[in-house]
Every structure is written in C-alpha cells, then in structure tokens.
Length: 469
Image 1: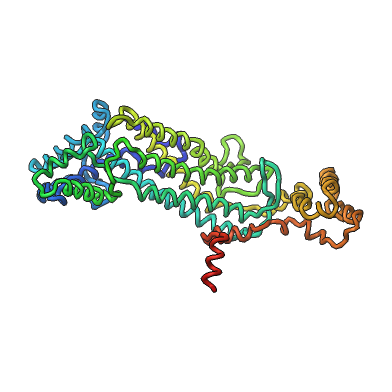
Image 2: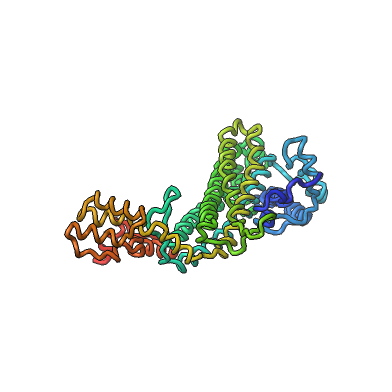
C-alpha cells in the first residue's frame, strides 16, 4: 500500500495535518485500548501487574496522550481492516501479541470496536481542535492589532458590490475579529465536550456489568470504569453510550465549519480588496504566476476560500450520517463519518493556519483606500444628505444634487446652490459632506471588539444605575 495524498493537490493542508494522519489515528486507537485496561484496573477488575504490563508494552505516555511507541505497523493493519470493515478488529490481536501472555486477556476486555474507534476519533479531533484554536488565537491577535492601527482610517463600505457609505479599515478588521472570536468560542466549547465512548456490543454496558458481577454494587463499578476510562483519555465523561446518538460528531463538525466560515469570510474580503483596480489590501508575500511575473496573487486567501467552499458539504454529510445512524450500530453511516470528519478537521487545520499567517502579514495601502473613497466624488455621503437636507430642501432637491454630482458636478457647489435656493445658509457644508464625519459608531465598535466588551443594553444600563444609587 502507498499513500495517495501527500498534499500535492491540497496545498492548503501541507505541513498542518499531521495530527489527523493515519499514523496519528493509530496512536490514538492504541491509547484508547490502553486506557481501557487502566480503567479496569482503577475499578479493581484488572490486576495491577496486567495494567503495568500493557501500559509498558504499548508505550503508554500518560492520561490524554497518544501512544507513540506501540510498534504496530500501519499499512498491514489498514489492509487487514478491509475484511471486518474497521481497523479495531485486526488491531486487537496485534496488541495482544505485543503484550506479555499474562496480560493479553485484559486487552479490549468488554469493549466493542466502536468504543475504541469513536474514542480514538475524539482524541484525534481534540488534538486537531487544539491546533486550530491556537491558530485562531493568533488570528485574533493580528486582527486586533490591525483594527487598532487603522481604527479611524475612513474607507468606502460596499454593499452588493457597490460603494455605499463610509466605514473604516479598522471596523472592517474588527468585524472579522468578532467572527473569528465567536467561532473560536464555539470550537472551544465543542472540544471541551468531546466524550469518551464506552457501551459494549449493543450500548447496554452488559459486558462490563458481567465483569463486575462480584462487586458489591456492579452498576457503581461500571460507572467507575466509564469515568476512569474518560479520565485516562482526557475526554469528557459520557452521560450514556452514544453509538447512535452522534451529537459529539455533528456539534464538532458545525463548530469546525463555523471556524472555516469565519476565516473564509476574511479571505473573501482580502481577495476582493487586493484586486489590481482596488488595491486596498495585499498579503505579506503573495503567490506568483508561472506565466505572468508581474502578479502577486493572494495565495493564502485563495487557499482559505477553497476550504470554505468545501467545508459546509462535509458538515452536511456528518448530519446525514447522524440521521441515518440506525439500530444499535449504523450500517455504513458510522463508517461514512470517519473520512468526512478527518477531512473537515484537515481543512480547519489548514485554513486557520493560513489565516493566522495571512492576517499577521496583511498590508493596507492607505493611498488606495483614499483614492477609492473619492471615486464617487463624495456620493458616499448621499444617505447623510437625504437625512440632513431632506427636511430642509426636500427629497427632490437632494436627488437633484446626487444627479448633478453623478454627471460630473462638484458636490459642495451643488449642496450650497440648493441651500441658497431654499434660503438655508446656516449649514456647515464642509462638515456635512466629509466622509470622516459620517462613520457612525465605527470607532466605538472597534474599541469594543478589541477589548472583547459589549455595549450595555437598556436593561444593563438600568441595573448599573440602580447599583450606583
């Protein structure tokens, strides 16, 4: 067997996806099996010598860590997994052969393949989520710095691709920041909720009740096994077996999609604003062209967008598999999850890593920002003219001002002429048509985003007033 994907057609993920590679999944599978033996020991069922023998033979590194020195060959295991439909079936005899004779009976004792594979996938997902969260945190820091630096740099806001009203470069970065922060919070919550899986063959834990039949309270001993298993893996304690209740997978998948959405939204703006005719943004080191040496393509943005285009469909597949998880173990739906979840994790790893580096090196061309701001000769403030001058000169007169400027006229001259005709001379025209004077709460919104605070609602303001009194 040979690997079919070293990243040649997936430049997004090169150098970021080792934590979800087959070798890492195998390490997690072994760690889950060792954790089970250790949990049986904690519950007083497996003898200490067997626990130690299995732990030593299979390279136990500690609670929550993968087993890296187990010595199980990956490719033969993958080939042998075909017959039974999952890799745990051939893994168990390989593990038993690797431990001393006296300890072999305790390997995989009471478990079913899904217990081990689901737990290993959660371990793999946790490691990948930690890596993605690290990248998202770096992106937050870069965006915060960008928002602060350009807090008051006025730019043209665009709606439906057209110039609309003034905004600021800082607010645009703050908007990206809010999306990334929200996504990171959701991914962190999903990561913290990832549970171990232990249910036995049919999700009843009957095998573990049987193992604990001589205990004073078998059900309590079984609960001890489950809790100890979760502790040894570092995963959350499940409230029940979730063989066919797949919320751990779908909720994680949704959080991953949201994270990719958040950085994809940044990449979309970067790709648009780095267009030659706009030129407001540029990546720190753009990608070149094989035929056109003058080009500096927004390569990171392009790669991130490629992930954002794929991720939602992968998330939808996880939901489809969850909905079709029939009986007490799904016939195909469970199997469809494995590569789907892994690919979604892989995209999240690549997209967030590229987002961190892209935002750290992002350059703003303030000359281009100013040039584009004036492209409509002041009509970015047309909304303000309607609000401020409509009651004075009438809506028709405001539309006439806009029409004359659109035809090439001067905005200040047109406004003054309309005011003079209406007999209104006490309007500060220069201030009225200055885009800097029509950015609303942009500065405050930037400050709140950077500080992580939220504006007070009417109810919270009332509460604060009562506290002050």
